[in-house]
Image (cartoon, rainbow over all chains, first blue to last red; front, side, top):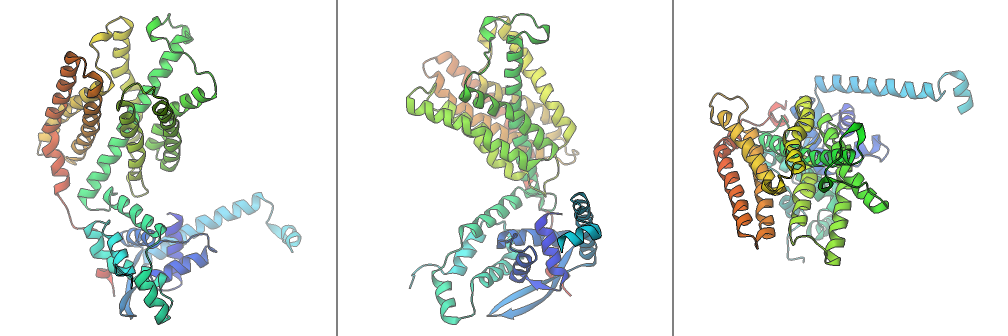
Length: 110
Length: 350
């Protein structure tokens, strides 16, 4: 799973969002490191929809245009949880190697 | 008043770069999201934005990148785009393979010149000297990089291959520019044509190697490197070493004949109605025939003063065109079938 796809799925884990809502949420989640252009976003959404990881939720009228909202599917939730576990395991390994785990590290940090 | 297109129309014009099937599914959604990213909610500001603003270069670039990914598609795209994607990927690998074999040839000559591995003395006409000085060494290493680029592409390290390829073609371009500016270009168009067709175009076409693209068949492509050298360059080397080089074709002639031979090998499968997955390799060969043909035509100017060799070049071109025509119907078949695109979330909506 690409970094962009991971952030898009994470954005949708908080509830259904429309296209630009996803862009904003991804930027916030990544602390400004991932700024999706619209072309990139819809490349990712198309791929995730094709893989059955997201689906359309509803459409709402806004300023004379329809906003389509997307949500995670059950498969999407599972894939995201799996990916999150991979990231968490990697983060644990990094922290262990840097000696950032355990009470001593916590004490030194605080 | 701007008197021109508004922001929405300008963005829709950019979206025309995308395939029709994709626009049918996503255009309205993309336009809505794009306008959301611009509008402030203040009516007077929004009117000015809608009338005068233009999509940023970053937005345009993201649509161009998406278009390249879709037209040179992966397995999830409609068949004609997948066929084009596979054909371009195969053609890029073939051209990079040619570059890698050329480098391998130079390395073998270099090793032989130094009589490494107990090799006998190399005939004087084939001697190759090692690079001396910074610039020749950079130039040399840039060429050697083609072997690494080929292996990286085959192994699926696309980003590394792209970066190395961009670095590899720059020294050649600088050398050509220097030769052009100093008036010491060996031929009027040939060197530039080689750089464009065998360096720049493959590097640009590496956009087809994206994350949706199926990985190349590793073993056959990796074996193609030594096999290509043994089957093509060893006989050429033997002819040169024995003083029989006069009848050998030049590089563009060799490309024409090799592609023509590959087309003839392909003919039985191309004409077989039972061949599964038919069409992609024929389309690949048509692309390679186009590259070889264009290069042959451009390098014809090298032989304008030699009517005999000029006729030989025309014969090579004719052989290439005739052989490519045999697989052209199968290549067209690869684009014809367009099964339904993948399901769209709209149809799955609650």
